Length: 151
Image 1 (cartoon, one colour):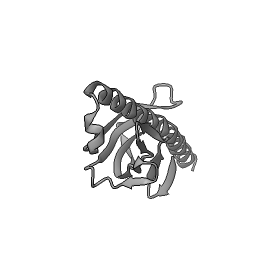
Image 2 (image 1 turned 60 degrees about the horizontal axis):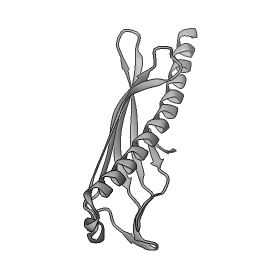
Image 3 (image 1 turned 30 degrees about the vertical axis):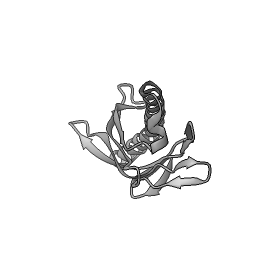
């Protein structure tokens, strides 16, 4: 995860390969911190703002996301865990797009298994990245709140 500024983080996933297609996707996600309830506990709201699937059909042969109608969206909310040592919540992940012609010939079961593996890998990576980032933001929120109450 790389911070881009203005509370936007870039998730860089590992390279995923399926037959001749290679993906090295990035998703830029904005994280906004809101206060909620009497205790003013933070809620971290996540929303994707940009993405790049970095697709290669064959080694050295790239294709644009728009040519395949690819869309990647990430959204969610994280809150401090009950014990205050981490964050918990939901993050949803959605992808859409068209397969290149050679891939359309593969059996549906093979395509479904591959897409499930890719989606699960991306979703798990996003969750782990934001658990780390959300926890760090929560600890910063707590330090600022304690410093304000000491003043």
